[in-house]
Amino acid sequence: MASKANIAIQSKYSTPKELEVESIDFFVRLMSLLGLPRSVGEIYGLLYFNPDAMCMEQIASKLRISIGSASQGLKTLRSLKAVKTSYVPGDRRDHYLAESEFRRLFSTFLKDEILPHLESAKDRISRMEESLPTENEEQSEFYSIRIEKLKRLTKTSGRLLPALAGLLRL
Amino acid sequence: MASKANIAIQSKYSTPKELEVESIDFFVRLMSLLGLPRSVGEIYGLLYFNPDAMCMEQIASKLRISIGSASQGLKTLRSLKAVKTSYVPGDRRDHYLAESEFRRLFSTFLKDEILPHLESAKDRISRMEESLPTENEEQSEFYSIRIEKLKRLTKTSGRLLPALAGLLRL
DNA sequence: CATTAATTTCAAAAAAAAATGAAAAGTGCA
DNA sequence: TGCACTTTTCATTTTTTTTTGAAATTAATG
Image 1: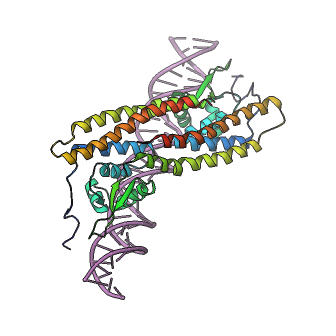
Image 2 (image 1 turned 180 degrees about the vertical axis):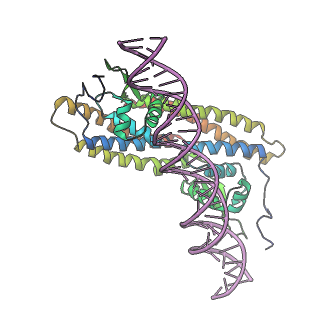
Image 3 (image 1 turned 30 degrees about the vertical axis):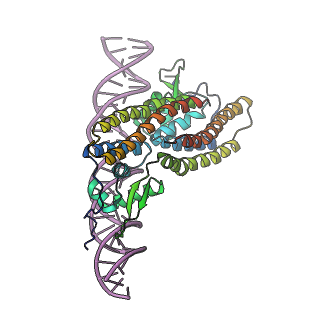
């Protein structure tokens, strides 16, 4: 009980309030651009400027969100490889640090959220080609051209997006 | 009144049902990836494989959505430059065709939805720099490095995204 | 083991986003 | 100008997403 964790044993120094607020704001917006819930942005924003690893309870109470949200949010961030856990001796709780390499975050996001859509898009385009009408010349040309454009779109995206993630050596 | 538009005077031929369904499905997903509502994807998907321009009422009734949704959705698509209007003699209603150059759609989307966020991000980072603590050496170095990474992120994005749109000559 | 602390899960509540449709506004034509 | 048709607007409803918190699960410790 003496090692109860709200006795912050090894705290280096604490994030200036102003910096913390701006950081949370920044990442809430960024994550929401990626379609992720506000709580995920809040957690990442809080961790980003924190020199010390934080446990879930600290995160939830600092952000005034429920432990359910915190747990869910951390799960999302873990799956995006946007946080890492750090071992704190004498404390059995998990402690979290922000992964500050955005490249990892984005490439995981691309792999998990975007590329699967590209895959299913390819299937869908195949099905389109099968249902192409063949009777009328002018008619089938119109549809072919449209389908061709969709193919180019998916092909280009499939090449460009991963390249993009690679370029992001931040 | 004789020119009532459901008498489809100049209809070339009609989209095969299967193609239409797949197209709507495709674009509903794509638009939702961009954070746009389902109705916007439905409308664009319907227009994409339609050789003839359609008026709002036709779109709404074909998709079984309200005219309010149709109006809103077309407004969004117009602002993205994803549809063009075409004049139909003897009919005063607006008629819509899909703009099949995706490049335009994406570059408008970037300009309208992403770049403004990048702008405000720059401001936010400036504010962060102002609230950087200066007392402690090690401390301020940690924060500086983090801020530096945010700067690189916004700078890289600001250069990469427009380039991306340019590459998309589909 | 049994206990207690930490975390996850998930049904219900709250909040946010989207769709509806009727009323208001706009538009062209006689 | 006035009428009839078309489109937009927006308060309300519906749907979807997110959050909450209590219960269930998991895991460490004495």
